[in-house]
Amino acid sequence: MAEIKPFTINPPAEAVEAVLSQVRAYPWPVSPEVEDGWNYGCDGAFLKGLCAYWTDDYDWRAAVADLNKFPQFTAEVEDFTLHFVHVVGEAGGKRPLLISHGWPGSHFEFWGSIEKLAFPSRFGGKTEDAFDVIVPSLPGFGFSSKPKRPIGQRATARLFNALMTEVLGYDTYLAQGGDWGAVVTSWLGFDHGAHARAIHLNMLAFRPQGGPKDEAEAAWAARAAAASQMFGAYLQLQMSKPQSVAWMGAGNPVGQAAWIVERFHDWSDLRGKPFDEIYSKDQLLTNVMLYVMTGSFTTGAWYYRGLLEEGAFASIQGQRCETPTGFARYQGDTDYTGGPPRSFVERAYNLTYWSEPPRGGHFAAMEEPHLYVEDVRAWAKATDAA
Image (cartoon, rainbow, N blue to C red; front, top):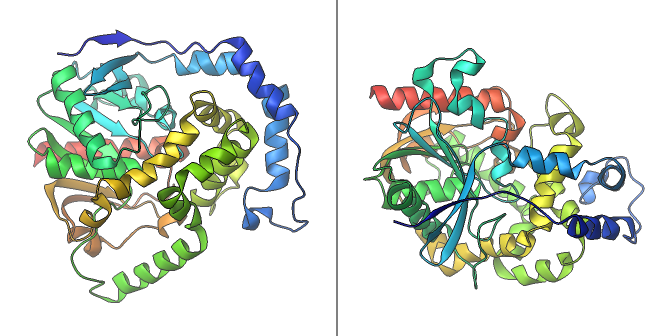
């Protein structure tokens, strides 16, 4: 069994100051004088305000203390050092829940949910709803080690299953994920269903055999294709030429922030409140700093190429996962135009739980932690009762 080592985040003050100096010295390019700059990329006025806060008001020491508030560890799995948060909650080791993040998120996405999932009685909930919560950083992200070349999601699922079973000693577990985490979680269910006894997704990963079967599916597929055409250039670039992104981002924390924050804006649920009320500047900057300070901007982009190189891009088409699956359709997820119809998901997964939370988008746990926790609890309760 691999040795589990306690881990504490402790960036050198001079390294943080070097980043802040680069932000202060950034040579701002011209930006279009239009009403909504988000239509052209990261809005210039928002980005300038965020960077001013970054250099003058962002308390990075407080952010580090916050990032250290949950127990975290590292362990060697195959050729990787995996970083992970591990909170043994009121479940006392009997109900493990593995949560996988995506891009351009991080393990920090779940900061508003972890304690509620692990210790529900602290928030007026029931002890029987508690989990042991495990949140790894994807290979190449955050404080997990960097691959020598791109790694994909199916390989990540193998690493995460080994983390859960061989390192942490859980024979069976539940798994949840969105964005790339949904793809990793789908492979956990497909390849490791003997251990991942049920999965929960808030993004579609596998695609069913054949095209749309009815009007609702056809309408969603058309909306999704149009959204991909309009907003999917980042995906094509990071899948085909990820190092081009790396060259531009290296030594450029403002550029990295713009690239990341644009995705948070475009994929979040803006129907009920403006962007600056969905996330605080501190939340956005802490997530950005996890990329800037660890070199994850480069290897995070590689993760798209990894999908192509491991051959999984073709294999997610026409697959069906027979592991019991829950799906939360967050209708404010503009990246997937509100999510697919239930019938479409049912053809790719053994769907045993379905929900449509009233609010929330692509980063559900970060946008609406209360709704996210409620939904995961309801899915797990339904899974246990089945």
